[in-house]
Length: 196
Image (cartoon, rainbow, N blue to C red):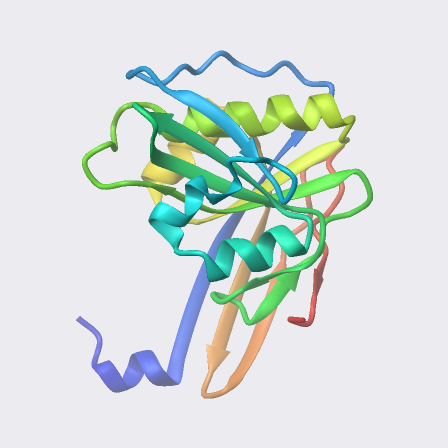
C-alpha cells in the first residue's frame, strides 16, 4: 500500500467516457423489482421526492439550473436516481467541469441505495433517462465512470451506452494535467471547461 503522503503528492484518475447517440435503440433493462420511474424537474409536483435521500438544498440548486432527476421509486420510496444537466457540471476527480454540447445532456451523480443494489435499478433509471432524451429530441447523452468502478461500468453498458473516449488526469502536488484520448470514430469528443 502506498504511503499516505504519496497520495497527497500524486494522484491519477482514469475516467471512461460513455455516450448514447440518438436515435439509437434503447435496450429493455427492467428492474428486478417493481418500480415506478419519475422524471423530476422544477415544475414537477413531486420534485421533493428526492429530498428524502439528498436533502433539499442540493436538489433545489440543481432544479434552479434546469437539471432533471431520473428517479426509481419502490412502494413510493426512492431507491435509485441519476441527475441530468445541459450546463457545465464540476467533476471533483479532475478539478474541471464537463460542458454538454447543444442537444446533449450529461448524466451524473447516480446512486442506488444500500440494500437495493443488484436488482438492475441503475440500468432501468438510465433507460428512463434515455427515453426522456428521445422524447426531448436530444442528439446525445453522456456519462463518465471511473475506470475501476466495474459495477457502474457494467450498468452503463447494459443500458446501451458506448465507451467513446478516455480521460486520464494526473496531479503532482497542486498541478493537474488532463489528457483526453481521441474519441471513437463517429462520436464527438467530450468538452471540458474550468469549474464554474
